Length: 538
Image 1 (spheres, rainbow, N blue to C red):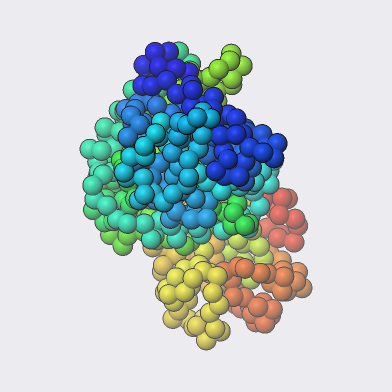
Image 2 (tube, rainbow, N blue to C red):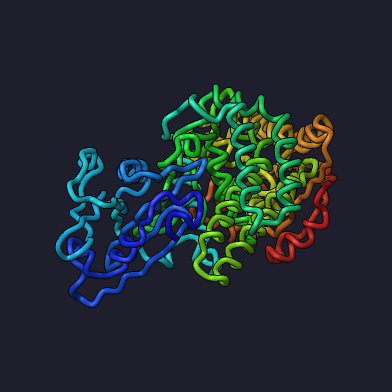
């Protein structure tokens, strides 16, 4: 595409793009003499060239309401900024910034330097590029998702990495207040309307009606979150295409550098992009898994905890889907051939439908899963949660997690046996109820995962449902002692401290009358989940 074909293109970069499509342009990177090929990848705002062990990213000369790469000077500054923001999460991937130089042999890539070294203009520079270490494309999470290969241990590590990044990110009060959200939602809708040649006009019209209406009553929570410190300088574009494995570790890259309003946002709104992308690709279980593992690690501000903010999640998911819709729509307009245009337009329309689905909300309900250690409570909770409540599914409140949290320990650290006193258990169950109450009040369905061996513990959970006016179902899992022993003995990397000794001791508990639905948990997880799903409240 050249300037004049679209109003958002400000300069003709065709000569630079043609030059960088040739291996000899990369002599500074050791390419050009060994028969290397150059692979080009086009996006709405950038062109990436893959050559040898490197990826070279050129910013398009485009100007949108949310992004301005319209001048060479600005593109140079944004290349430097991209290095700086992405070294927070991917320091080994981002090597530096390089000029594109004009010389006797034609246009070529110049020497790679640190971001601070490009503040003075390079003589002869006709363009600037970000230089990265090339990673294996099959390790992109979008590729893993397409092949069904995002293993649970990778999702655990990913949720932990995002939680650490968010908790360490600098707090800002400059953006993401109530008025900012209203303006940005209006801007999103305008972007959808601007792509009507490739988008579904009826869907855009419905989104324009429903999204502002869904957000309006929640604006006080938005403002409370900003004042409490939940708005931080984070990633801003956290979907599956921007996560890869580096040395086997989930790594976030390609964070937003070009607009502080896009990346200075509520941390849960940042997370929502990933959850939306997983859900849209048919990976609702993985989205719920990430959400719960994130919440088990990060509480959010004391004055505005994450659980209370989940009332905003449907609107956030819908907004993220809208953003992908108009980005794909713009890519369709830029597509070089009819097949690519049709593919991008189809993707954009699917995101529009996802946005509408996220806005169709259902009232919350409460499910409690009880049973002695080794009965499979958490396994069943994780199997049911994606299908219970609004996307991305139910919040799981686990006694094992809350007991560690109250003790000031990470969820996967071990508590000694003497920490399991009646007093500690009473505090744990009180905390379970408190957290479940917050999530229910935010409109989220909740699964309480706890032994609940005492009749008064079960009664307190039932009382919470009556207090909140939500449907309730209690499920009790029965399993033979030898099966429970085997399961507990095989556990690794779990929050539970239960041992085979604990299992044996629990057999002497006086459980009292159990009025909850009792299920044989010796059967496989799939059969148990099928039976339990028919018992879900609501």
